[in-house]
Image (cartoon, rainbow, N blue to C red; front, side):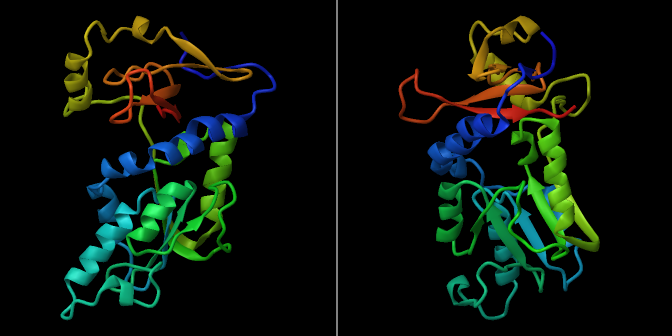
Amino acid sequence: MENTLFMKEGFDPNELEERFVHQVYDVIASEFSSTRHSPWPSVMKFIEAQPPDSLGADIGCGNGKYLTAVSSKYYTGMKTNKPLSNVQNKNLVGTNFIPIAAMERSPNLAEIVYKRGFDVVIGDILRIPYCSERFDFFLCIAVIHHLSTLTRRIEAVNELARILRVGGQGLIQVWAKEQHGVSKSEPTYYVNRKIKAVHGVNNSSDSLSQVIEAVPGAYLPLHINGTEFRNTDMLVPWKKKNYKAVDQFIGFQSIFT
């Protein structure tokens, strides 16, 4: 099986992303949010390296965990603990004058962000609702791999570049196909741990034999959780708690090499 997206002419990327990205995230938003609570150190390091007078944007902010992390870092250090709800610009939070605006595509995830005390706009990364050259930096964490074609991923990067001021910085992170551990000769702890729990599943290419016609013209392999990624374009299942075994939600991921 080739490491690529199997498609015919006439494949509609908007339909694929609507069904296997946007709708999925709206259904699993609450449970997904409960698993996304710890900010990645590399992202926090990037934010903290920005000049004090910077203005940033979190494009595809998810449940707002970086807004929460940055806000907590700022308000914990204040001499007077001022509740976030009393701050005039709730959508602009940060450490020592490093405010961050928030944009999210999923209405249900955006609602979680709002309930945490932050203003958030609902928008599409292909049409970011901010003026050109508005921000000194941006975050785009685990977003672009949900776009189903190379053309759309390039368009997204161009949109991100558009909102940056001259000399600005951006941090883009995506899923990597190579899931290595401490050394490149061994898989990650995630892969090792999960494989032991999946009976009858080995890590060979034969494990990914199931191919689904996601939308007319687009045939995608179904990933087996806990195994290494064998294809660059895949459908990844999400099993919600308290749902029957047959009830699972499948999202699209484009894995980068």
